[in-house]
Structure formats: C-alpha cells, structure tokens
Length: 397
Image (cartoon, rainbow, N blue to C red; front, side):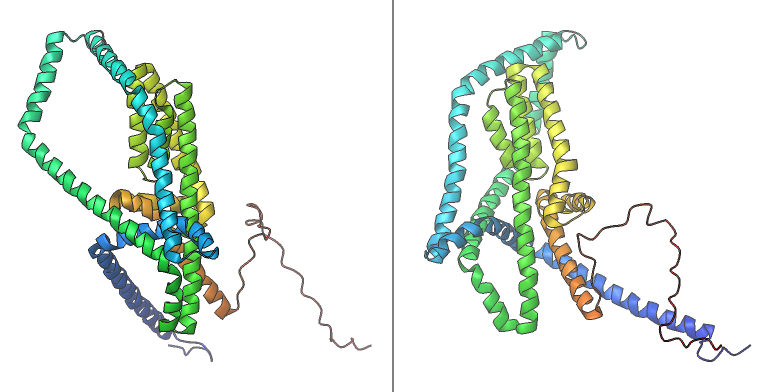
C-alpha cells in the first residue's frame, strides 16, 4: 500500500469524514423531524383555540386600516374599534337587507314555477327513454319514504349532531368577534411588550418578520376578495343573460361563498342551478351549470393561483399544492388557511435567506436584472482569454 502524496488524505480518512458528516446531519434531521412532529401534535391538541385566533388575525388585517385612520383622528382605541366593527356588521346587514326584498317578492313566482317544474319532471319520466308509469313513480316515492322512516333514528342522531355543531359554530363566531375586538384595540402594544421581554437583537428580527407576515396576510384577504368579486360578476351576468330569477341575490351569495373554499363555491353554484331548474327548465339549468363550471375552473386553475402567487410571492404550483394538502388534512378550514400559512412560511424562509446572505457577504441578483434566455443557459460560451500581467518585465533584447 502506497502512502498518499503530501497534503492529501487516504481513502479511509475520506470515507471516515464522510461517514461522520452523514451521521451528524442524520441526527440533526431526526431531531428536526421530531420537533416538527411535536409541533404538529400540539397544533392538533390546541386547534380549537388556535383556529379562532388565526381567523381573528385575518379579520384584523382587513379592519386595521380604518381603525388606524380613526385613531389618527383622535378617537380612543376602543371607540374606533367598536365603530369599525359595527360598520362592518352594518354593511353585511345592508347586503342581506338588499337581497331579502327580491327573494320575498319573487318567492311566490318561484314556488309556482317549482310546482310546474315538478310536473315537467314527472312528464319527462313518463316519456322515453324511462317510460315510467304513474304507479311506478308512486312506488318509487313510497320506497324512498319507507327507507327514510326506517332510518329515522340515524337521521335524528345526525340532526342532533348538526345542532351541536351549529352551537359550536356560533360559539366560535362569538369568540372570533371578541378576539378581533381586543386585537384591534390592543394589538399595537404587542411589539413594545415583545421588545421589553426579548431584548433588542431578537425583537428587531421579530418585528421585521411579523410586519412582513402581516402585509402578506392582508394581501391574501384582498386577493380573495378580488377573486370572489370576479366570480360573482361573471356568474351574475350569466344568470341575467339566461333570465334566471334572483340573479342579484345569487351573485351576492356567490361572492360571500368565495371566501369559503370548495364548499362555498359548490353550494352557491348548486343553488343557482336548482333555481334555474325549477323556474326555467332543464335547458337553462344546464346552461347555468356550464357557466358555473367554466367560471370556477377559470378561477381555481388560472385566476386564483396567479393573483395569489403575485400578492404572496408564491409560485402557482405551491398555491395549488398548499390548498390540496390543507383540504385533505384539515377540511374546509385547512383549505382556507393553507395559502396564508404557506405564504407565512415562505416569508420566514426568505427572511432567513437574507440573514444568511448578510453573514456570507453574498448579494442576490436584483429582481429587475436581465435573466438569460432558455437557450443561453445551455449554450457553451468560450472561456475568456487570460489578461497579460500589467507589471510583467520586458523581454530581454
């Protein structure tokens, strides 16, 4: 066995150092994974407390600008916060009051058309291709009624479960409203408290990071409002063109449902299709269904990922994956909170990257710097010729 050249290592030394490096980082990876598991477990255990807090923070990002403006005019924090909350409730009540008369005025017409629509469905079932007789339809209705009666106990259990869930929902709404009030009233005292208890270096990092996350969450709410407005606008125009009753009310419901991912859009679209079916027939219902599906596909696959990626500086693929993960793991609320949580994590990693750049002396390229084209990245460029030494001695004659 030959000895290595001076300044070089043997293979065993190289393999040993690589094994030490791999073992060290393996233990670190296991420790980080264990910490993430504990954090996820704690989130699951305290989810009933964390959820109202997160929803209240999202509401504060929307309501804080008017509260701040009122406080700048000399109003006390409590009065400014109460005025903004009451004004928000008034706007919501005004919207409901605006659509209620149209619903009440057209309810009789819709009921008459619904009876007529049921008759049309019965006539359609009696014709080809089903060719059902009145006795068969009656037997079908009787069998459905019998099955419902047989499962009355399970239905009652589901009703009581739904009532309990509704009660929990009301309690959660009240808690969110109270937390929103206190966050808006006393939220500006949080940073001084944090600086007093954490010290200058840590508090500066926390202040910068939290301010960036706050701005990102505000962008999420504004983007969601724009997307919901566009959905309501196009679906409302489609309903007006197709002469569907309650077009304005259905458009408002579509806008409000846009803030509830998946279920909100589904319920609003299904309601529009049902109203079109019982009032204008199958043809109009199919046309409304096509309009709803087209608008929702445009919003879900194109508009929402692009706008949210710009406002939150996230790639559209990250937005889609975050919504899919949050929806599958935590349901509707998970789908709603997935994008802002992903944006907050991205802000954290981006800020840590800036700190690393400061310590290493590296500066990232500016955002407006020209980027190489696709072919320039693969085109092999010749190496530059070495420059002659400036202080090279002249050749001897």
